[in-house]
Length: 408
Figure 1 (tube, rainbow, N blue to C red):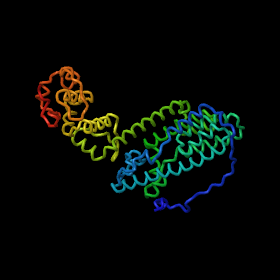
Figure 2 (tube, rainbow, N blue to C red; figure 1 turned 120 degrees about the horizontal axis):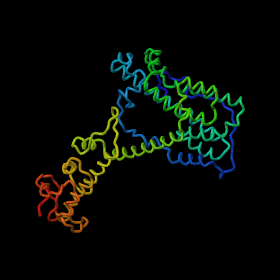
Figure 3 (tube, rainbow, N blue to C red; figure 1 turned 30 degrees about the vertical axis):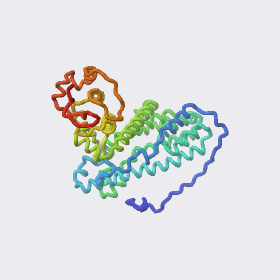
Figure 4 (cartoon, helix red, strand yellow; figure 1 turned 135 degrees about the vertical axis):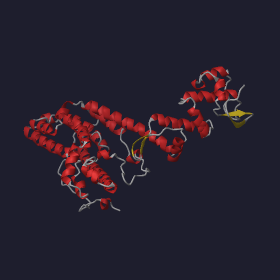
């Protein structure tokens, strides 16, 4: 099925041709370059990501909420319009609004792809060509590139050239401000467009979107020198002029930190996924793992401590040959046993009993020394034995189960 066949209103043609007339510039100097642009180029190469790898496409989607998003992102949520809808109507709103948002990003990113390709063709300096080439694949850092590349150029514009660009900035900013009011969605769904648009305008989601957007755009426009009366008046009218003094470099560093945290969380999810969904559910049911944070339906966050517990469980299974019921008792001893405490208990078991054939030979050590290393023993070995907590113990080159640590 063609993707166009999925559209509520099918486009008249599959392509849109835009006539253009511009020069392509070749540069024969390859060594010269501005450090800040070359630094962005290096980041662009390192931080590119592949959607085929970064997104878990095997996840099942909720047919009532495919994106797994909270209803608060819908502009009409909490209004009389929303309250009058039955569950089927709300599902229809979620599906259409999420599909519309994805279309906005998808078509917008295709436009960005075309624009960044043109930058590679037209910019005269090799450092800018280098960096723009990474944007053709990943244009996420285009704001930083524009600020660095253009602030040296715009001071040399004529008044007429500056006026044309400021007019473009104002028009583009208003379009961005009103980008997600969703008139097409409300019209397609047969909902009152004017009321839905007004509710979306006042929504918390729209306020957060505009703040995130203009906190980067406004200081960047000021920094590159397009800061005439027309631009300032437009931003004052939008209520975003206060962002003019925002530290965009600090914002950029914060954005990179968020990206790194996302990468770390993604690696955690990959490690969790390698265990298997059913195994994780079983671990949770058996009390070996806590319930993960669930910000939305069909969404679960696995933090580092969660992943560390999975690693430890697998290690106890694969290297210590412990069954899950024993692992559960170990992890439950004294409420919240740490890895070091459990390792000390297992080390104690290794000191007390002969080794299984072929396993590494442990050096002898006084029992009291081993016991003291485990806070879980509480310094009272006899009490721990009487509690009946189970460990696998080894005798006569065979493995058997014992209700506690055998006495010596």
